[in-house]
Amino acid sequence: MNIGKMTKRVTLQKPTRVEDSETGVATKFIDVATVWEKKKKIRAGAIVNFVDSLNVEYGIRYRKDVSKGWRMVCDGRTFGVKATYPVRRDETVLVCEEVVP
Image 1 (cartoon, helix red, strand yellow):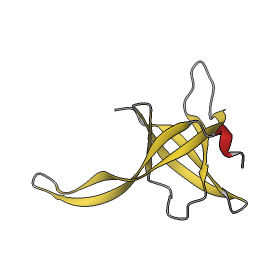
Image 2 (tube, helix red, strand yellow):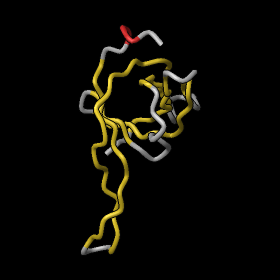
Image 3 (tube, rainbow, N blue to C red):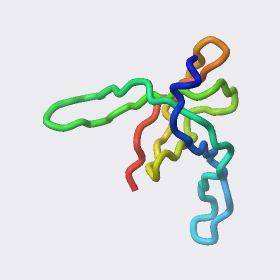
Image 4 (spheres, helix red, strand yellow):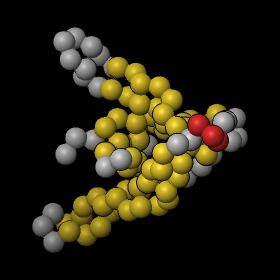
């Protein structure tokens, strides 16, 4: 991993279940860490006249705790983590899709 290519700071968020007065239980995302990242690849899932889903891969320093269902906030945009995989023992790749509010 070339640490010099990690140029942006992102916030990793973990889902947590909290009690809600309206529905009983709700999911809230709490900040876990702020880390450096580098964008690796952009992959279009299905292109027919529009992009149905767009996956973006981000590399961060190796972490064991990040998993599917987490979120990553970068430049005011929120991305849902769809999958993770390690690259050697020094980098974790997050496969993300932008969360549209």
